[in-house]
Length: 301
Image (cartoon, rainbow, N blue to C red; front, side):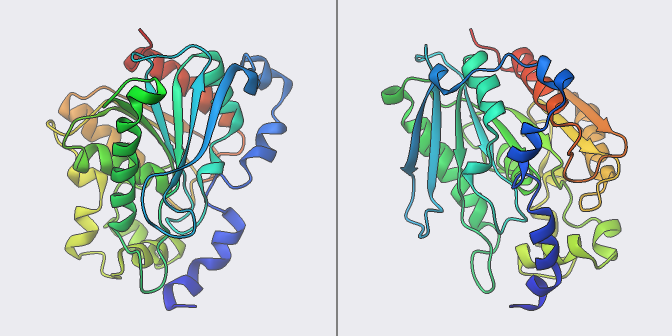
């Protein structure tokens, strides 16, 4: 086990990148939270599993697609990018209640992608970004045959997946296919002196991901959504963050929101007092507000 991996591996197992134990948490929603959803079972949508979009081993270049009962060339596509320290997790982490809500009830198409994990000596950034770009191009290319809107996405990312979603939208989307990003507890500044200076789990994770422990290195800036965001590259962005996040300090969400406002780009910041990185108590609210945001900025016509 490498130097940086040894530092953060125990926390990876404990936190598991925000979504790994999501299903159990969702199944324990309160009656009040459940009443806010109109639940739809899988009979309301079609699942196409394990589509291969690239050549990476270990199923890391596979994705799943979910199509509503009624769909066609105008059906908007939403793509989910999982979290997990850029080094674990998978497409299975897309929560079923979110599929039920957005696909089964609202009528969106949806996809969830795998990407290659960073590991000792291999797959450092921008490997994951390359995979996201390849997956989104594949999804767009399949639009005509599968029946949804081409060259048009909303991106939903959780934790490390939110970082990748924001980076794709702000720095890698030359075709301007991204119409909005839903950022759930995503890191936005990998050079952040507050986080990197603590020399804890977050600093070790970023050093391992970038392959460079220097917070002042150029890659720490070029890999940060905050520094890639501009009037030209920005898209409407909704942000969800816990105020007691122990991994991604809440000021990262606030700084991104402030820059979006400064640039005149549509944005919304949803902060949750007493919530940590896992956002255990607030997921129902996050899902409902995500659906509301999408209906405003990325509607089904």
